[in-house]
Length: 263
Image (tube, rainbow, N blue to C red):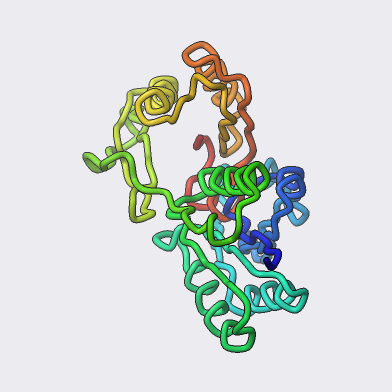
């Protein structure tokens, strides 16, 4: 049985330490801010999250770019030349062309390496939701010694239906969002004030979470709002006894669209 790597893109928002622990190959998206194009990498080498969100809060414009076909071709071919197969899990196709780029590269390389398996999966998710899929994939692979085909079930179905459209923020209404079954960002509810919105998120854990009382790892991503992170951690511990909560910044590619304060 051929060995295989698990590849993804940097919109998974896993930290450099997590990437190394999970032994992932991560391709960076890019962002352009104040006239400079930088890479969105797990180690934040080009710009720290704190600096990025400070610039966004000050009104800086930021544009983003997906991983292109050439990047995927180069990274995939390196693994194929080493005799390894590839399982590639990408940022939601409804939010980026990264998945399409991976598919094009994979299709081209299948002709050149017909003996290889190159499986490209649309995560239908973003940020550390995508990261959680990768975490679980690696954990299942290690615990059950799963083959690449056995991990090809890695798809996340929508569990929450969308509701009314977003309302303005002038009244302090905070939207609670969800990536739906087509990978689109949709509102599921709204709450008056930040803490009420955060409590609504924790309510969703109780509603759709799979056995949260078993203290399974939970991942939080945030746009420079550490107070909200600590508040949610406290609620998760109080409600479900969850203590293994791992938080990390939302990366600049997604952060350019969410702005500051998102969790």
